[in-house]
Length: 264
Image 1 (cartoon, one colour):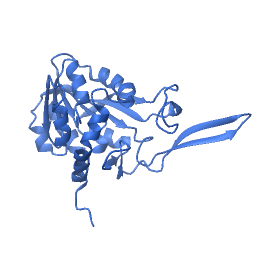
Image 2 (image 1 turned 60 degrees about the horizontal axis):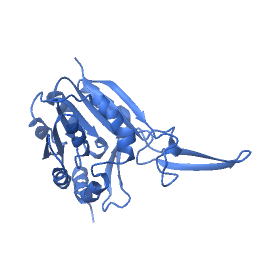
Image 3 (image 1 turned 30 degrees about the vertical axis):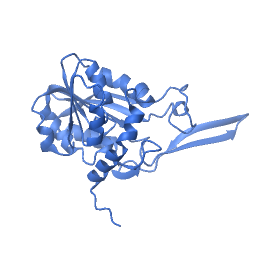
Image 4 (image 1 turned 90 degrees about the vertical axis):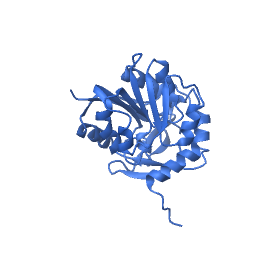
């Protein structure tokens, strides 16, 4: 039977279906990606000051919204999954306004208000969004002058849907093992079904794009890049499986974090 859902609708259905298990996994504490790779960089890049207003795009269960609010930000958080927003609202939400909103809908985004936000965040979600053009076109209107947009990604060059983790061993005056990542696609955008959690009930769509796609989208809409980090686990980071992301791949970054700011 032909799937008649658009990519955006298919993605929406997957996140509604997976909301319960995703919320249980991330809860209020997150995972090693959140706590070791992402948050230590996102926090200083955003430079949240008490009373600043921040937009959290594709907020999921509100994990990062709550951390931003704890720093004193007034947070507007949105996600197109009503199931994720329901679970976000069930947790502590002081200083946070949650709403169900599709970030591919430019007119909906603009209802948030002109020049309302000191900063915006999209954490590990742009690759889950079928069309990111509306976000990059709306943000220059939503942000205050000199406002910034921080986003994180699975690293497009090393951690995309085509990547395969490899372990090779050989005898060189003793057995040696080398871990690497094999990539077969990068430049041409494509979409692929996959899982973020091994036991999630429904695969989700990944919208794979090269890094230049994101940067050009920002440049074309008045942003400059003024912060950037590629993040890898330290060599001593333990992993349950030797081929999972962890210390064995300490020279290969699975994620990146970028800050774009409106040009003055």
